[in-house]
Image 1 (spheres, helix red, strand yellow):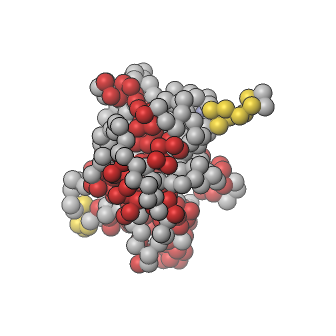
Image 2: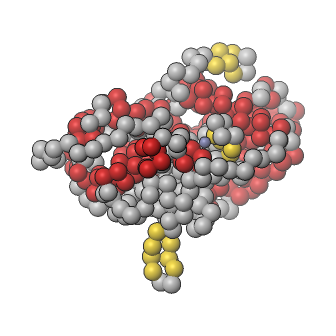
Image 3: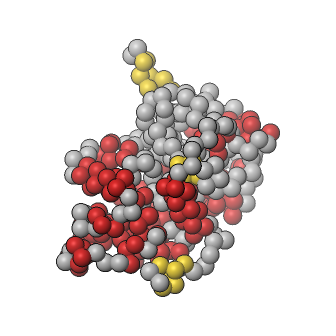
Length: 358
Ligand SMILES: [Zn+2]
Ligand SMILES: [Zn+2]
């Protein structure tokens, strides 16, 4: 049992709380509620039983132990369903990489976040307009939701606002909510002065460590000229989001066969790994030369990237070749087996699959 759940002091529930927003993530909710209560996220985590220490462990955003979830719900006046809905585990029935029982063995919450590369555990993509909120009073004060879906590599665009998601802060250049290596859910988690939509990354200026503070939310963005490629990507994203939502379609057709959304994402992952592992055998599957260049660049850099740069490139919707791979899969192009691939697929598939499941 986690030490943080051994909270026996009968704290009274918080004087004020917040209703979770649609698809809101655990760190996003902590930021908004802490801002409303004029507390730091670290202090809020302590009084709600999430931790006994200074930081907020990153694995809390995946799943909470039952006693911890109950205490958090009691303190914040949220129902058990609302607390579970904030965690990434709530997506696991549709997205198996988040399933603690994925691959036939019981995985530890911490282990999933250390080893699972189809979840962004140490940073988040974001939509600037979503963060600006919907204009309601509560969102004008505390910002819109940091979506838990932005933690998944398969979510790279916002169909509502017609934009690719951002991944890095324009001022400090680091991924938003970058906490790699710290074990913390958020950077500068003890800071109570930042707005929930400001960049919390630490920067050093003139020898002094401080928060970056860049405002990531922006209500209005310039309208982009029409682009067939962007429209294709937005259609693809809408379809993937439909599968990720619990009220999404129950069955999806993949290569002419009906399957479940969960099985679909497993297939997508395997195929992505096969494409990367066998590249350039699948070069002729790409629809555009730009798509081919993205995959090519990604594969070449896989062997040379440092861990930090690998995280940055995986976060980038523009650079992630996986987007291009997904596009090939979604448009059914992989239903055609390329001649050049025929001799590679049987050899590389098991290897690629093993890479995925590690
Ligand atoms: Zn948006
Ligand atoms: Zn920044």
